[in-house]
Amino acid sequence: MAEYEDALVYYETCEEGLGLRLIREVDAAIALIMEFPEARPLVRGVPAKYGLRWVLLRSFPIELVYAVGEGAVVIVAVFHAHRRPGYWRERLKRLPREM
Image 1: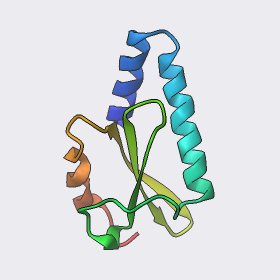
Image 2: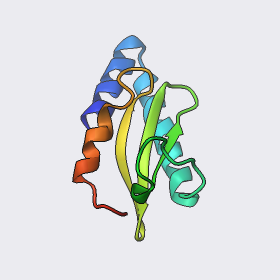
Image 3: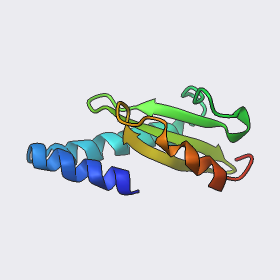
Image 4: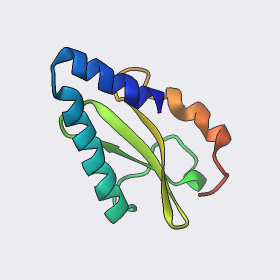
């Protein structure tokens, strides 16, 4: 995902090692999602049929939006929660009607 890569580059240019911290935090969030996929709240304003859920990272203003499918978790977006927060919704057109 381009926005994730952009965030890594941005944070690493801000401070050496910050990009690695972001990677670790995203990995930890994904591990929790995989362990408890239904635990996070549904995304507001998105039809429930998509079953999209979200998680905000602890140390970064980065949000992950994901869907739980049959035996899989699909990461739909990784983005800065304060900059154009809903821009990723155009991707709904490319998702199956139900996950």
